[in-house]
Length: 303
Image (cartoon, rainbow, N blue to C red; front, side):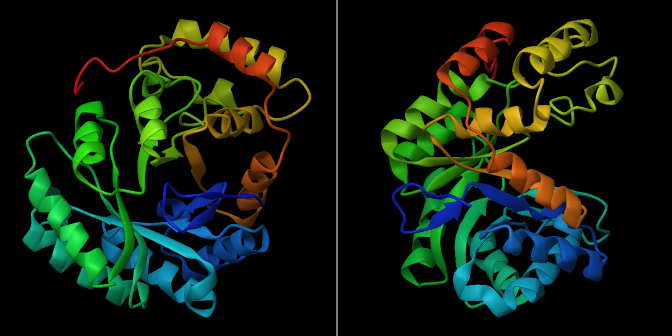
């Protein structure tokens, strides 16, 4: 599998990353998915301390222990579970970030984290303090590089100007083209990579789209609009291959994108995702068709 440089770091990540949130807590099944990912050439594994109250990190750490030096482990912090573990609160403070990383390291069974991310962010955060915590962890060798997981242009802009982030994780798909207006051009110009999630748009950009339609629609698409659009995308772009392939290739066609993060709950699904990423890239004509058929939607808030 091809690899791309993550921002200006010395990390080279596979074009497909395994989003570990979907692994669940069945250790044997999770290990099978992770092993399939390794066999397919995936070297980038994304987790967070929030997932399954830290159990996800434990599973990922145990499964990757034997190949630790060959993989890129990414995790996130900033959300604090309450004692009852039925809700969490946002805490981007330096004190909490530096405490949270200790738990991540222990659960992952490693003495360093390749890519440590702030799991969210608002413009009212103490951003300079948060950046300071990541910079100190980097200087201490506890983390190699850091970034944020955010879709908010105003927050992203602050980190571009004030930090040395390597990448930003954000939702991006053919149905959610909001990052194209501000975030993607800004990050690409700054030499900061984008790692995308949500590229299949909750299953709408798959061959099973008819079963994924909802009366709620999706973002600024109504159910009626999707009923018209999705068959057109399938007919014009994916008549000879799965629509999922087109969806993932659309993300990878943007020069700012280093990797697409997709979940998998089985080894077969993991291999199908790998096949999609290894498939033929979209032509410029196909990209033009997609952009003509879909909306160039924009963020209405957090600008």
